[in-house]
Image 1 (cartoon, helix red, strand yellow):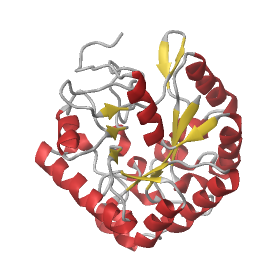
Image 2: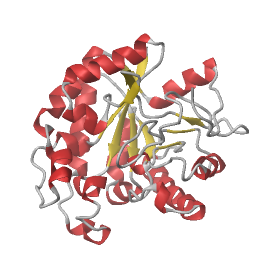
Image 3: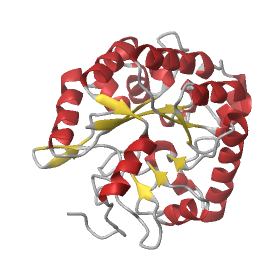
Length: 288
């Protein structure tokens, strides 16, 4: 079973936890660490012999086009994370279309490759904005990884399917949701992001093994800032600081262990294999 290894490329000050502490008008005055941190991720993947999918902000590509080229040259998939990390449910359809066009243009110019995959900032496609999948299909995207099929204080679509589905009956667009395991009959996320960093490694290993044991591929994700113990510390609310800074010093070792314990690859390869098996349509009815 080959699982999807993904990276959301944004800087430490662009995260949802700090969105009420650091405004977009302050971003260019913050210390930029995304390029060095992403190069560390590239070095780690190169040393371990794996490739993955990098969902990258257009804002990043605008400031460091050489980094995007390095990601592509190393054999990784270049994908879109939108332009400047605006949650999709804060936009209308046309503003969203403009955002994805701007981001994909910058990424394609920098990489020299077509961009056909998208991940919404903070997994912000949910029951409030199912029109977003239609926009992505119309813009030529082949898949999205933008739905979290669970309840969370920042995001979530609890009724959505746990595994890949087609959100539009008349399109081949595939949605690959956040990986969830079942614990006591409830969906839990432990395979990526803050969940992976905050929880003991054994929990994530159990979650991925459960998913693989059921015949499904898992998807993990993390951010380059999560391996950067030297990043600035700011005076944010306690909950935000705990979410952001906890276990950063241990993250790289945990990633190396995760990559060694399971098989990993690019998400476009996973989607291609899913399409060969057939992906069911789901249009918003209660999931089984």
